[in-house]
Amino acid sequence: MIADKEYKQGDIIADGDCSHSCLPNAIKARNKLMCISPVDIGEEITISYNDNLFLSAEERNKHYDFICKCKLCRDESMDKHMKHLSDMYNMMTVFCNKGILADVALDIMKDIIDYSIKNLPEKYVNFISKQIISDAFQVAVFAGEVDIAKKYAKELLMWTIIQEGDDSPVLEEINMYIEDPTKHVLYKKIENKESVVGGSS
Ligand SMILES: [Zn+2]
Image 1: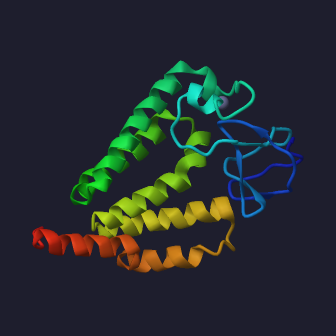
Image 2: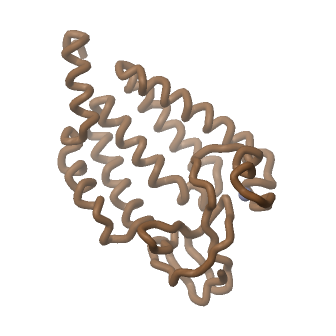
Image 3: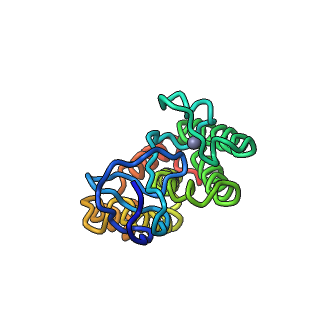
C-alpha cells in the first residue's frame, strides 16, 4: 500500500493491505494502522509480520514464506548487532529471574536501549521501543528503582499513544504508574523478597 499523503509518527493511516518489512513504518494495533516512523507521499507503508525483538535475518526469515530483502536482512553488520542484542536480552532475563540481581538486569536493560539507539536503524528502534521501554519499566520496578521506573513509565505513555492511539484503554494504568510505580504488581514481589533476605539494602 502506497501513502497518498504524508504521515507523521502517531498518525492513524487509512487501513489497507500492507507488505512486510523488518523495518516497518507502521504497526497494526487495536484494529488500527498506526504510523511509527514518518512516511512521505508515494512511500510504501509496511508492517512487520514478526514481532520478536532481536532475531538474526535467518531466524526472522523462518517466519515468512518469502525472503525479506530489507536493509536489516541485507546488511551483515546488522545481524551482528541483533545477535549481540539477543545475547544481552537473554542475559537480562536470567538476572531478572534471580530477583535479587534485578539491579544488574536494569543496568543491562539500559545498555540494550543505548546499544539499540546507537547501532540499529531509527525505524527499527521506533518499532521495538514500546516493548523495550515496557520491559525497562518493569525491570526498574522489580529493582525497586522508583525514579527510574517513573521515567520509563513516561516514555511508555508516549510510545503507547504512538502505537495504540490516545484513546488506548491502557493509558489510565500507565498514568497511575507515572504517579506511583510501587502500585505495580512486581513491586510487591520485591517487598516480599526483601523480607526473605532480611531487608538489607
Ligand atoms: Zn527484512
